[in-house]
Amino acid sequence: MTALTLSTAAASGLRADAIVVGVAKGAKGAVVASGAEAVDKAYDGKLASVLETLGASGAAGEVTKLPAPSGFKAPVVVAVGLGEVPEKDETYGTDALRSAAGVAARALTGHKKAAFALPVEDAEDVGAIAEGALLGAYSFDAYKDQGDAKSAKKNGKGAKAPLAEVALLGGKPRDKAYKAAIERAVAVSEELNRARDLVNTPPNDLNPEAFAAVATAAAKEHGVKIQVLDEKALTKGGYGGILGVGAGSEAPPRLVKLSYTSSKAKKHLAFVGKGITYDSGGISLKPAGHNETMKCDMAGAAAVFAAVIAAARLGLEVNVTGWLALAENMPSGSATRPGDVLRMYSGKTVEVLNTDAEGRLVLADAIAKASEDKPDAIVDVATLTGAMMVALGNRTFGIMSNDDAFRTSIHEIGEEVGEPTWPMPLPADLRKGMDSPTADIANIGERMGGGLVAGLFLQEFVGEGITWAHLDIAGPAFHEGAPYGYTPKGGTGSAVRTLVRLAEHTAAGDLG
Image 1 (tube, rainbow, N blue to C red):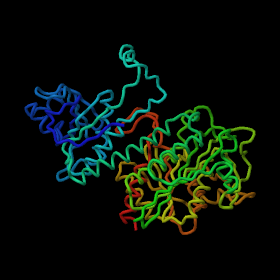
Image 2 (image 1 turned 45 degrees about the vertical axis):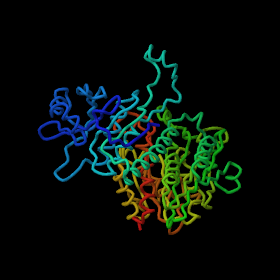
Image 3 (image 1 turned 180 degrees about the vertical axis):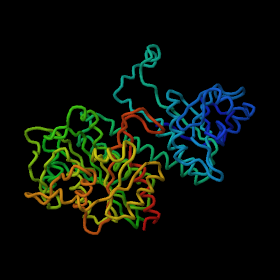
């Protein structure tokens, strides 16, 4: 993990491989952002002109490198775009700073140390820059041949190490708020990156048992209570949904309960994550071209796991329980068939018309179980439907809820932390499409509005009187394109920051 420090050193005298500054897009051209005054002065106040000569405009995500001015111990200045210059009396948004820091950290892969001289108005800005740098420096190289350093350099092979150290300039190292912002950024970013690692791990190494083992180790390290139900316990407990999905795999399912408690807590949140460690579609096999990234179908469980551990590391004054519904969905002679009826943990029966609509089955059991604890709210997180991707694209996740105010709160929290979200309805007329002549409900309904149908299905298993929300992160959980901002190729850790901030607001009593 990249090391992070607050520094009061002058940019000119700091020993580093690079100095990172911000440049914005003004009405008349590039504008050097605050925080880089000393650097601009060393260029005789002409840094913006030099950058424009090199083609820089200040557009978000843009990176321009140039030799550092005479007298600087760092050899290179890296100018990163912040987007439009803020209006009068406004500042750069935290996500603009977070994204710029992420771009810069990624551009400095392979370097030992960089000083970030980006705009800082308060501790919140420092936290955003720190978070962006730590998330942007992420890489997943566990399965790449590293080779030895000499041969890698000679042959141009081997993965470059992430930026090793970031010194943030403009902060106040002795200020409690600034120190707390750094500590929070480190805890959240480390756990989010752990979620990314889980999503990126190939399914031959991450089956339900292996995932449960990772959760067990982390829980013990951070003082979180953990309970793991294996296939025998699941059978004894009547978890027909989880067992039905995992029936076709040689790797049996697991249900993991993570419990973080605070002696000062007045509220209790339950997070439930879909953890399909590989989704072939089961007997309703996915078509060619739709299987290659299905290791990511446990991203919801990874997000829940990361959020609970982060809450524990931050010592939040709220009780947070995480439920990881883990199974591998495979076709075999023992697999659940279309037309089978499963008796769920809640006692309801479900006619399985499509075995590729499996995530809702494992979530239904976990939601019903979580409801027994009578939490103040349940939030489930899942890469649940392709329909949500059709509706909202690859970067925005949908939110459904049985409480409009709660849905709005989560939407606002997502925007606050830089995770694009959109409130979605639960139209009552779509429920009829799941009526079954054989069972209490079918696991699919009308094709149109399929993401909403899935939400309606899950709502059936929420305990009476419990506030609930469903986050469908199918789009942003796994990024197949080129990296951008602080988002890498592969697992993204989607929803982790939203869940953590929800827990923080709940602890502070901001959500009623």
